[in-house]
Image 1 (cartoon, rainbow, N blue to C red):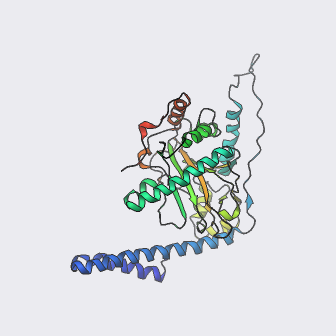
Image 2: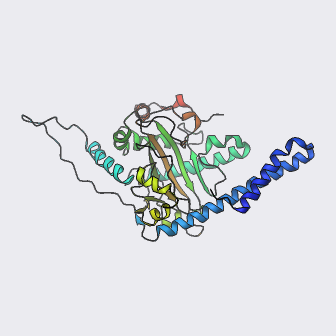
Image 3: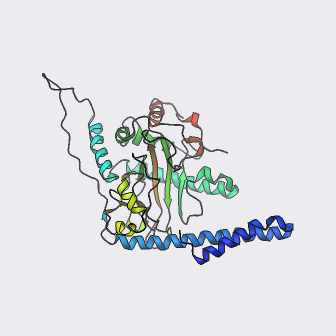
Length: 375
């Protein structure tokens, strides 16, 4: 890694404050404490500027030929009737389950796909209001006690105008209605719009790995192109971004590089001599979603969030969850965006059982998991 002269000076300041601590008086220590804090902040700012410059270079490399990500049309698979000698077993899968098989093939090939109309507009509106109110409450709690930050946010709070807000499965006292459970019911319940594809990709054993809202505000910078985790042989994690409002280009939609979830493409990306050429030749797609549409992606795929413009942009809230592929075991090298108390506690099957209880009138089907906070 190349370290700029400014970064080198800042690192020296931090080290100076740290290692001279034991040999100074209490009053001098207080001064050095402020010095270390200021140097740390300046170092962070210097790093962010370097990232912004690289992100701008990557945007130029991708060029202006980025196409919108569109939902693929799937051919209807004929049903096997299974009558007569040698006809084989009858196909008892539902149309949604047969569709999921085709969707899984797209995921294997491209690493990302758009799925339209996963949640109705009215429910999106209510969920968006809920999410933004929860962000306000989280900001108030972390302002009082910064130690709570990791309970409420999956990405460092200092990132400019961008955060992953970790959500609770328990209704909040301020909630007039249990909107979170309603949303989960509509997307992951027995007849949920996204249940069949997740059953196809990860089975009911897939670990519930993330449960959050990705929120960006005008002024958020473009991200550098990145995968979410180290390369694995199998797809380790399948992630959903569900738009809670229409997403325009000025709001910083996510760019995906089709087919870059493979080992071959990761090798190019990790090679500084080939990386720029890879980006210049990439088959890129921009997720300009309508309210209620979703993007499903393999966490290995290269992608980035674009800048939410100060003029023309507006708050972009995305419902975000993921499930882990049980074929990939061990440490994934990526801590998902989920409250600490929920980590490793639930599978897709567990979520389905809880939602079935809610369908039967059980008010708090996730009560045994609590609010997920560690404090």
